[in-house]
Image 1 (cartoon, helix red, strand yellow):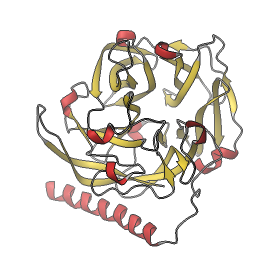
Image 2 (cartoon, rainbow, N blue to C red; image 1 turned 90 degrees about the vertical axis):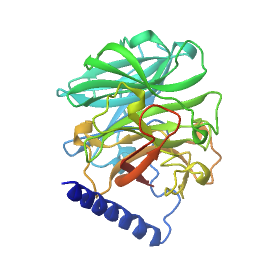
Image 3 (cartoon, one colour; image 1 turned 90 degrees about the horizontal axis):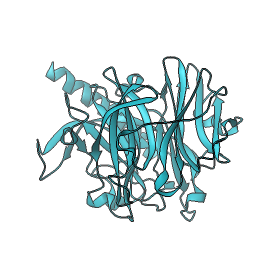
Image 4 (cartoon, rainbow, N blue to C red; image 1 turned 60 degrees about the vertical axis):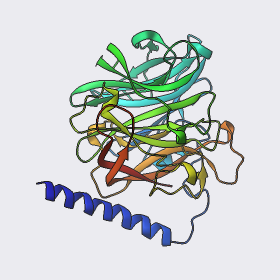
Length: 356
């Protein structure tokens, strides 16, 4: 059985690797080949049947689009589904998922230290959402970029937040959910921005924009963004839960040894190349069926990805960011190493390759 798993992993690597090799031999594509017309940050895209549905901030509220493909979302009508009737302040990073046949959009709202997570829901994607509900996250601290997912039958909520009441650094936290709108129990820290490659740009140092996915062995991954979103050093990295690990135990998580998707060679994990056509590839969305990680793709083929970046050659700024369509595939037999912490110093399993 171990030999079969090893063969399966090698075959998947060769398929994904062959694709990368073919892409590198093709004539260079235009610098904006994957750029959409959506001039925004923090994409969230899911597939429901044959329809692709996205959520985004719009005029202080939230809008939803529907299209027949990720690349067609930019031409689709952005329908306003929530207008911030209670004046919650800044609205950031809406994330749309389907749970029990109902649509839920999680988002950040507030100002300064008052940013917290909220949720709206509806029976249909493009309308009928009621008033927002504040998520009663454990400890009630500053929280952004939250998302709900189900792993091994348990709903979880993952977000970026502060340990206390001041902006020292942004960590990743996890909490159980007893329903799509009800956190339960404690919050658990699963990552802090403590590696040299995720501390190139700080004040504060950040781990943010977490997105869950499940690999071909059924292990949980949280792909997140590191370095400041105000810099072209913004990049994506991976947390992989060890086989049989406890999601609430920080030392059961293994972190990639560098960025897996970014524009600076110096911060990339060995064997991963920097981007050719964009700078600051960060906040992203795995385009999964119903937004459900239990529909995560198998090894071998590439699958859709939506991410935020700035076209290479454009001065980097928040206002210059667009959504880009890309793809990803699983990359097997990848070892993540660590030192001076409890547990094994290395862990080998699936990682991810990203393509512009």
